[in-house]
Image (tube, rainbow, N blue to C red; front, side):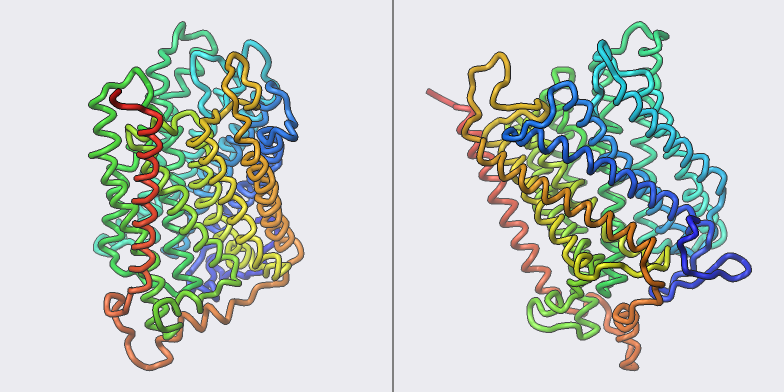
Length: 572
């Protein structure tokens, strides 16, 4: 595939990875390349449009007018929130399933058909958005009815969602065959995480088809009316569900990458699996925060979704938040990779971009995306967040920092382990995750700050001159300057990743294995003694980090209640 690989295969199409030890079949590897490279192309397109969006919201520049702004914002959102993510997630399913299990990819024709449908749908969405004219509206990500969007847009969405569903079938067939042949064998944790990801994805995609197939019929004139309240309820199954796919895929990558590069072990497989199962039942409740101000839903629905049911998903996230760093600490301690409270962390391979991107993903997602997601999903606090710039600030904290950094970290190792190419520009590759992560972290913070403290609206192309209001946002001007500068830096950081990835594929030397990783994997065996069980290792460093996280959570939670109390006066 693409003629860029340096690996050779046996007569049956298998090879053994010289770094991970995995047995990989060419059929699965080719599809990982195809979907992964397409995801990279989507990242490039979305990043280009991100520059236009950022330089419009940075009002000292004000690059685009209102009509163009919404068109560019739509393409930016669909390419980075949907296309970049979903193409990569299909590749992740094949890695977590066929790579880890050492199996051929069954139903290859379905994988190719799903890919063709996804690409065709993405192109139709782009064409419909780019050529839309009145009375059609630029659909943004939500494409709320009864505002009409181009027919090509609705058709493209249906094709893309159907294609993603079809492309996931070979992975599900792999799991089915594995369990048929080995009914008593437990799936590896990475495969189990990928399987849970596929279930959440199927729920979201089916919800999207339930939403967009009738909407297409309405746009074509076969339905006279689409109930807006029904549309909003159905839309958020895919609108937020697509981001829940990102969450499970990202956590699966965290387990995989910390093990491969950092030598992490799983502290307790049963507990980690239980956390994935909790997501199956409760993670879909996260969509409720988009409807907290919706008059179509009742108080009981809001209370259930934002409190009792949502706690199951929060508990699952807390389990992973402890299990992954604890596994890294235990794994490195038992291989004598650093002592003291944090020696295991200081001695980690921070110059390796795959490792640093993964760890930055964990930190930034937890502190920026995770904490703010819980607060925004709480019924009362949601009133200070809803429809402000803080909302995209939150999902830039989850998707643009957490998930994108995790996918970048995996992407570095796809270049090595799948294409067999060494990275070019060692220093630039080392710097890239830090540049992108730090800059995008500041961007997310500024958006949340501007939204919660200043009430800046989330979608209006300008803020200082909103028609129909005398309210002044002039005090927010300096923070928009910080936002604009760091948005440009983040886009440069993303572009640097693209340049390194493409340059490595074209000009990188053959990759013969990483001796640091090989040594890490065999260090325990060299001593001649069986390694101690993970729970016999100290995890006090992780315990300190978890305490810091909880203190931060409590402080921010209390601060948001103070801000709400100042806005919502009670008493005389």
